[in-house]
Image (cartoon, rainbow, N blue to C red; front, top):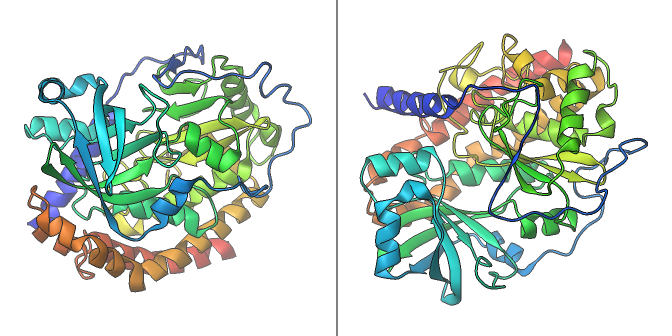
Length: 445
C-alpha cells in the first residue's frame, strides 16, 4: 500500500508541474524580469564570432571563495530563526500564493541579520502546503532586499520545505552529485526553521542562483541570467513566458542560442560552441540522467535550470533538485523507475526532438563520448552513496526529522530502507545495478 501511495503522489505532482500555459510563439521572446533587478554591461557578450568554449566548465580560473562557502561545507543541521511581526506573518498566511516580501530579522546559529526580505517561494511545494492549510511554507530570504545586508556574503537563500520529499535529502544529494564530478552547483545545507519561536520543520537551505552565486562561480554577476520556467525547451516554439530573465535586458543572446540549436544539422557541431559552453550542458544532462532528475530539462516540464551568458557563451546551471532519485514511470519512455534509460539523456527516443539541447549535442559522437564519461563519474559517486552516503545522511538529519512537527519520521525511515525500492536508499541501490550494465552496453555500441 505504501508503494502505491508514493507513486500516485509523485505522478500527481509531475502532472501538476506539466500543466502550464499552452500558448507559444516563434521565439518572439518577451522575457519577464524578476524582482532582482537587471544588470547589463554595454554590448555584453557580443559579437558571437571567434569565441572559444571553456574547456573545463566554470573552473578555468580558481576564484577566492566567500565566507559563506565554508559555512555550507559544515556537516551539521543549522538553526534558522525568522522573527517577523504578527501582522506581517498573518498577511503571509492569509495569502501565501501572492509571494509578497515582508521585513523580517533572520538569525542563523545565533547570528542575527536584521531587516531582511522574506517571502513564500515555490510551486508544487507551496501549493501542497496551502491545500493542507499548513504554514510550513517554502521561503526565500533576500538578505539585501531593504539594506546592504548579506549572510557572510550570501545575498539570497531559498528554504525548501521538503514537503513532498519524505527523505528530506533529494535536493541536497542532487547538488552533491554535480560537485562529485567536479562541476559547480548551488551550495546547500540543512536547517531547523523556526518562525517566531515555532518550529516549522527541517528544511534544505539552498544558495540562490543570483549575484553572490555568480560572483563565487564566475567572478561577475553583471551578464544576462535566465531561469527556466515550464516548457523552456530552447526550441523555436518555446513559449514566451517560459524563460524569466533575472539579469539584463536584451535577449538577443538567448534568441541566438535557440536559432543555432534549431539550425544545426544532426551529428554536426555547427556553431554550437560559439554560443554554448558544451561541457556544462553535457554535465547537466549526464547527472540529470543518472540520478533521474525527472523535473529538469530532460523531464516532462523542461525546466529547473538556469542559463548564464558569460564570456560570449551560455553556461547551463542546475536548479531545484527535489524530484530526483524517484521510482516513477509516469510520463517517461522507454522504461521506468530505476530502469530509466540514459541513452538519450532521460528524454527517451520518442521525445528527444522536443529537447533540442539534448538532441543536437548527443548526436555528435565526440559530445556523446563526453556525456557517457560524465555518466560513469556520476555512477561512481552513486555507488559510494549506496555504500555510505545515504546512511550518513540518515544519521545527520534523523533526530531533526524525528522532532519535525509534520510527523513524517516513520515514512523517513522507510526511505532509508535499502530493500524498499520506492525509497531514497533502495532506489539508489537498484539504479546502480541497472546503470552498471547499461553504461557498458552504451560504451560498446
